[in-house]
Image (cartoon, rainbow, N blue to C red; front, top):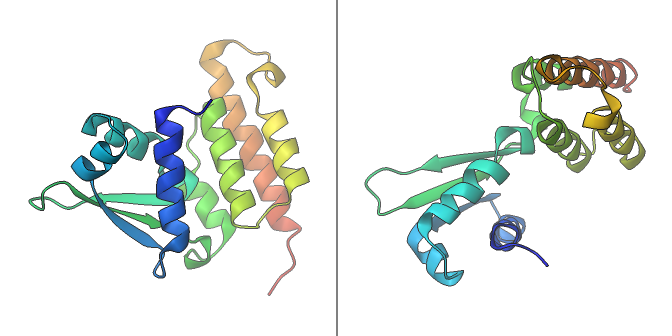
Amino acid sequence: MPTISDMIELHLKRLMEEAQDKHVEIIRNELASLFDCVPSQINYVLTTRFTPARGFVVESQRGSGGHVRIRRLPLEKLTTLSDYLFMDLAPELTQEQARHICERLLHERLITEREAAIMTAATRRSSIPVPVPYRDQVRSCILRAMILEIVQHMPSG
């Protein structure tokens, strides 16, 4: 059964798909009323599910009664995938952050479903049996190496 956060995320993504200019503007209080939740629940969804790693930018418009603009960040605007990689890939990544990056690359059709599955499996907690302080660093290095390998084998042009 989906959580309220899942339902809000799906609703916002549907709005994004329907939008001609690939951005939507919402009012937190109105969305909270629609889902019968508190506005902080909307904030939680925006800050955890609409991140740059997932391909989104969320802009709050001050003084406009809780208006928020959500924009999709197309990777084509960056000069290369490797630019994105080094701009967005932190030196430490949690399992969830790594999965979100793989999902984003898949969504942007820069990797195949098979590559996404392999990358996700390789960056799982259970695949990196090292002490916790180092696991997130190792995960970031593994993901970076895999993406660089994909970049090197992408057709030019």
